[in-house]
Length: 318
Image 1 (cartoon, rainbow, N blue to C red):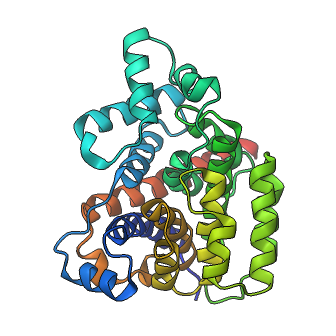
Image 2: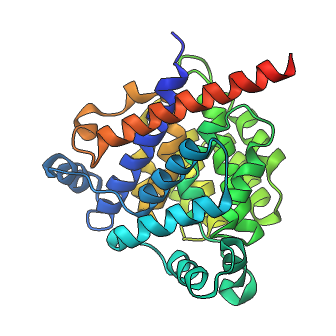
Image 3: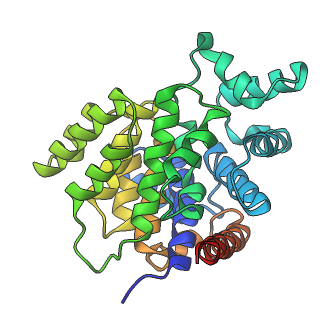
């Protein structure tokens, strides 16, 4: 039975939020048994800035019907001002403050931070899943992802990481979990759209580690688990490709090996949820996910607007 696109939209957005929330708990409960016990005890699974920014991106896409950098930057700033306690890193608030005080664009502000090099962190990749869903199947998806990253993560590696993650979500959405997953082909497609050496090299290493069935204890230190996108996204992709048919195992692989646990969970589970669909997500966890009903409604809205957009594009070309 084929997975519906609607199920993949919901699975990706809700799955990413679960990965984020459970990953945040894993900082305090790094043992598998203790983590699962805490998840079971928690009345509410609280997400971080990873999910807050993904929701902001989804809202912006739904409102505009396309990517608008300035509108997206304003959305991110409003969301931050309403919930500054979500765990934002230093970069976005610095950019928001600079735009507010100088009147420059978000892209200009993003290019000035980190000694004028821009951020190569994983903050743009962690939030990009809604864009991968909205523009799924479109040839310029990776360009849209780079543009979405540029307003906060203007370093070429930061933008490239977002492009690779968005492409992975879009690819997973079009695959069916009941059919064999061609892991080598999946990674090769990602290599083909990557534009920076650090990420291409890590994707090559990812392919090698998966081909030799390397365990996560070996893969994690080699691929990386830091806040830099080229040192975290590859391991998140490893977690998905190592456990493509089991959402919970993918999540646990991503968050139980140290490093930037919540973001690793968010990235891995965005791809897993897009691939498996919402039906594969643990119902007991979903029932306790913060703002779940709002996320479901937003995912459905994004799906409807994405399909309407594609219908108009087809009509105009005939």
